[in-house]
Length: 103
Image (cartoon, rainbow, N blue to C red):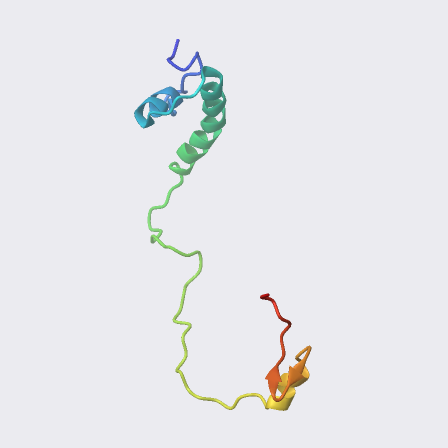
C-alpha cells in the first residue's frame, strides 16, 4: 500500500503523498486520494502530448506570426473640438464635464 492511503500513482504518474512531503504540505489521506485521482488524468494527457511527433516544427511562443505593430509617431490632424464635445454627455466651456465622484 502506498503512503497516501492506497491511492498510489499509476506507473510514471505523480505520487501526491511524496510531493506533499517534499513541499511540507499536511493533507489528510482522503484529500491526497482526491488529488491523486484528479492529477492522474492530467498527467496522462501530458504524457500523451509527449507522443506527438514535432520533428521539423519550429518552437514558437505564439500560434500566429507576430509583426512589428508600431507605426511612426507622426502628428496627424485631430478631430474638431465641436465634434468631440458633441458626443460628451455634458460639456462646459469647451471641456468635458464629469460628475463629482469624490466627496
